[in-house]
Length: 228
Image (cartoon, rainbow, N blue to C red; front, side, top):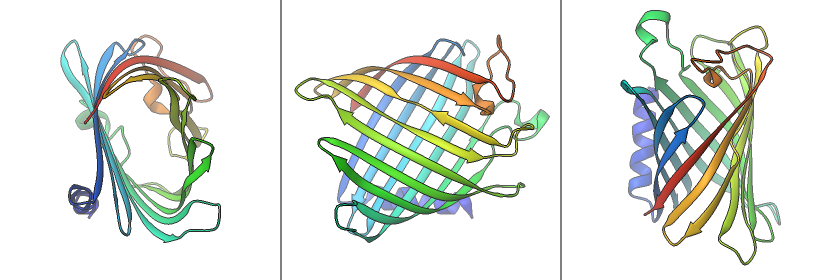
């Protein structure tokens, strides 16, 4: 069911009227990996679809992959409050350790409401309130904020997201993960830095530093992006 749903949502995006695609290459200095990323956003007459996939590569080859796909169905346009959407999302990933120690990246289905196109000047924001179901775990919740802020009369842009959610890892079941990005745009080419800030997010693990619940982690990257 989740795989079929993901394929259907991606198929919708391919045939959408307004489609944006980019490719990225990140260097994660703490994890000592390169991450290649593909992002697709598509708008159509009933809503929008967003998809991204990450592929991590270390000295021994590919180490991990992860993807998210989400579909917004527009419900209404409240006056001065952007667009109110019903949202359904699916996340999954694989690691080399999955066959030995169980699945490390939880397969997750989310559904709820998303308020998009919230604008203040040239800045655009999005807020999501979601029910979160990690397979094999109790039903939880997730709050997500997304932002895009172009710096006036300059090539600089600030963007990113923050997730606050329940999860089943460790003794502190509420996690937070934010990834602000600071970038410079030159036509189709973008240079920037992404900073992953997290607490109780198992993906913060590194070979050198390990991972502990209740501890804050900061992982910076430098990246190159090309907008198609």
